[in-house]
Image (cartoon, rainbow, N blue to C red; front, side, top):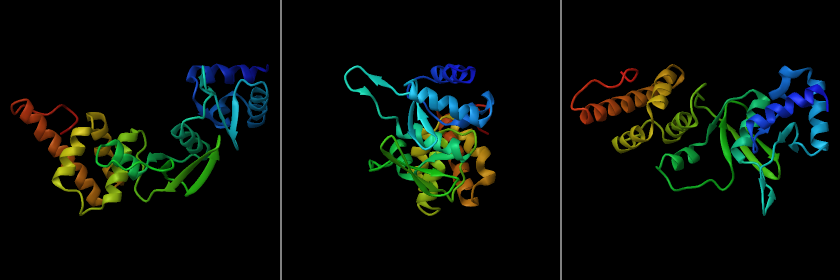
Length: 218
């Protein structure tokens, strides 16, 4: 095994089984050609698995089912890394995850800053839809899911019940990310974030008997 392959496998094992990756994840180990060759040899040796064009995984193993299909989100994240785009949950997935809907996507779909496309990997079809709403950098899937959900609802359908529900589901870190992201949001959406923050502050003050909110949420 080459030195590049050794270094690749060290990183792969550190990430753990189930990780989906592309040659770009190892470009610091050498030229693109040397990385591609090392991955090809590792796949031939059964150390990793090629699951699509430029996509590989370190497959999870089940004692009865054998080698498992990679998780859809892991595939989507790898595809985004491959193209350099940002990824966010779809509005439907966000609504379900935040407890505002019981609707479940029939097929995995994600919002992206890149172009709309469908990728096949490991027999799975992953849909990436271009988002007209911003995708916040260095924000959690939860925070970005709220942005996608708000964009789907529109400015006139975010009522007091939705504000109360969302503010209860977001943690301080997510709310802080949304506050910082207001500069790239449409004005009305930024105003909704301020309402979320105000509701959180009011709830916190009520619990604390009128004390000031935690630093960073003012």
